Image (tube, rainbow, N blue to C red; front, side, top):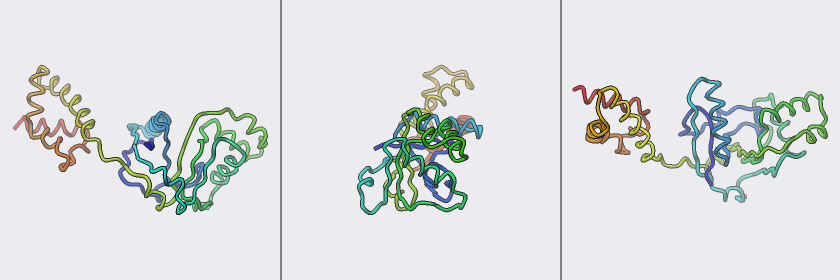
Length: 224
């Protein structure tokens, strides 16, 4: 199953030590099967940090959910048990995990729900009132809480073809503007360049570069 992580950084290696406590299901690496949800999260993080939103895609081995070697917890929806577990984790001030699950799956406490949870924690509303106020909001998250659980999450091989295509479009448009070329002239210069040859060769890892870096390399080549 494809799952997604929204942030402002392309995830190539997961380090649980960089993950924060106090989240819905505790410290861990969070993903969702809902791509739109990951995109929304990436846009929120990017706005906060004034950066660019990035959605990292992973392959999740769903057999892990029936693997007896991993301890799992699953919530079908918003209910008493979900609320108490989220409160347990959100109130955690110890900087250490307050549960021993490897993987936890269930709905998300979004901003509105999080506010309601704070009111519940602070005694402003009762559990009954919280559950009564709760409006169903389609959401999904999986928290990988241990190093062992991360073994069932795989970052797909870089999709070089799509990355190269993205670079092509931007490089060609800029080349046409900067050098006053038509589309055919720009394509001829670009696709016969050493820069493009390196970009299309996976071993060079040029595909990891931003298109602006590719363009600067191409300019250096053309100006020599």
